[in-house]
Image (cartoon, rainbow, N blue to C red):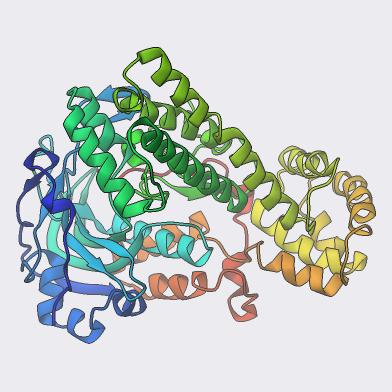
Length: 491
């Protein structure tokens, strides 16, 4: 048994990547294998969890059919352009066609230095690997497009960050690892042929419905990427997710959430929330994410101006028209999703204001984002269930005034209250990766070599919309609303 590789990115010109094998590790040990995902990919999980499979997952063996490479890309990092970044600690093993006919990348993260490492060690520590594994799988269970985690392997070798930490390798699965920064890499070099090859590859791989030729085809690609990103960021906001480092090299043109570095989830609702220790000015704060997504997409459109039209003014006009679709697409996805979270089946006049007022009151009263919406599900079924929601507000009377308006609006909705409650529970998770729980899980793994908290948390988060009364403690908010919590990239 092995990986059923069918590699397409490796067939692109040599300047797209650097070919090299992963650097072996001394004592590979499997931490966790995503057996369900392995089966979905057409890989025997028993083989993958055995010695030969773990050797591949650790980077100690190159599987038959693999064409390992580190991809080249550029990117804006906190608004500053870097013309060459690339996979500094990740190696793409190859691509497989899964059981649903979808092409998926198999990548090792933490697989050793590459030509793009910029003097880094190319390795990853337990913390970032376990965080990405847990959060990416939680996002998948929440129904949000995301890269997936196939396996985590301990390397038996230390990595040096602020202190000495145990090393690990994450096996990541993605629709592809092509980023806005990939396009920027070729645009910065005025490599029009490279851009055209990349456009053709991305359309064939991710947007095969796009037809036509020339500038029309390129504009259609921009609009398609804009649409997926608008929908994606709306979904982030609806579950309180903060990516933390929305650089252009961390934006996938496939529309998946990628690169879970300093990510975290809201506790007390505040649109200004920033978790990343390096985001000192709040560039990537929770409420800034739609604006930054459009900024990144504008950089994407800029790279394609030479392919949009021969005349620069016409090319800019076409790019601006494509980018103008972001606002309406995002608004429809976010406002529609917010309406469903409060039990409204369709948007009517005044609904956006009703939802916006709830968020404003939550911010003013330090109400927990996830619990407030989850508790509203019971309140929508029975006004006598208002008590637990009210308790989330510093001033409970602030909720009372809003709830009166809300119930007047719900009275206009079709269907029974019980059905409405079920619909709301299907979009309002009971469980998210609570930041303090994630930190406790990482501490147990690093300090005590105890992976039981990881396994338990992973199981709970695989069913985020179920009540799971036996795991009710995992739904609890932290004391103090999580104020002051900070995350770190781990590089």
